[in-house]
Amino acid sequence: MRVSIGADIGGSHIVGAAVNVENGQLLSATKVDVKINGAEDASIILEGWKNCLEQVVSLLPEGAEILGLGVAMPGPFDYENGVALFQGVAKFDSLHGLNIKRYFRQELSFIGELPIQFLNDATCFALGEQWQGSLKGIDRCVSITLGTGYGSAFLAEGAAVEQGESVPEDGEIYKFPYLESIAEEYVSTRFLCREFKEMSGGVEIKGGKALVEHIEKDQRYQVIFEEFGGHIAATIGPWMKKFGAEGLLLGGALTGALDHFGPALKSRLEEQGIYAPIKTSLLLEDAALLGAASLVIEK
Image (cartoon, rainbow, N blue to C red):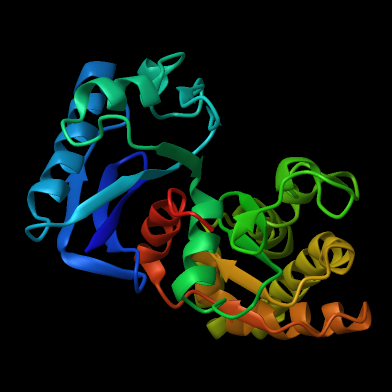
């Protein structure tokens, strides 16, 4: 059996697992989840990551051939060179400037000269869904993650597209100029909280779930989600047309409120002549793991 090792790194934990590259199935018996405090010293964080990955390999079936390691990593990070650029983002500050690829190369007993690849976690999420999830069979697609930020990824033929006239720079829509600011100020929990505070006369909420609870008591707040869906369509729609997207994947915490903003998103996209299906995650927390594992597989 040929396998790829995938890792999904976040500010509070690392999840690792092996994936059978022949059928794209995650080997659940190898899945390891280790809590990591992103505010710890670099040596403690790195040791935790190393231990998790070594545990994954120790759980492999006998005779498994490892092809390499793929890592879903949040930014800011130099993905090509494997260097941490975290600074002032409330996690991993102690890793700033460290070459994580070099560390893995030197410290992981199983890696040797095998390839090590890093990619943004939101993009890995999309790649996993395209390989084995809700985007399977859809070649050109756009993925967005909706929560405290506005993540995006443009995929074609099983790879991320980050440059060219058909995509925003680095595939990132969040920083694109929109209305009086940038897209993320209108497509994030900040927008929902800001609008609710204004409508309610100063009442503060923490996110989408709280807004849904208020809507259940007072339907007039539904207009906030309708505006939210419109802002998503206005910011992503033109890029979907340029890219020729055949599908749109939604991920992130706010997808739990899709019933509230989905109809507005769909209708506003259709007004732009976009009828691509809107999908949600099938693989859930395993999506980024599968996407990371796919990074070292020859496409």
